[in-house]
Image 1 (cartoon, rainbow, N blue to C red):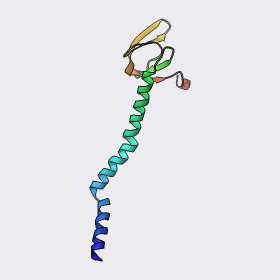
Image 2: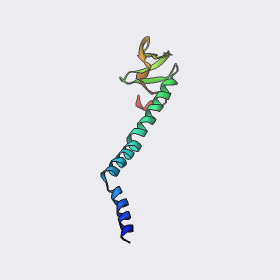
Image 3: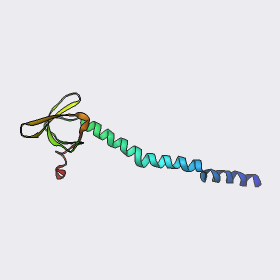
Image 4: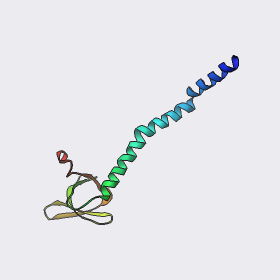
Length: 103
């Protein structure tokens, strides 16, 4: 009888141990912080790879423009009539043609 109580107490003490609490903290942090961030980064990467001429986008610097040309790592944006700039593809952040209320 005493042996059964000692084993049960050992299992209960594992769940109350600091090692278990640290492991639990990392699991919670993974599901609430790391996993959603990876999903968002993947969605942005898919968006950048699907850029095409005519899309209205915003850059990470806050420049709104229309995509005129897409090369390997360079996107040509028209930010005003007859004003074109080249930006790095990784700085294009969001598609504004599907989200008109944020203009």
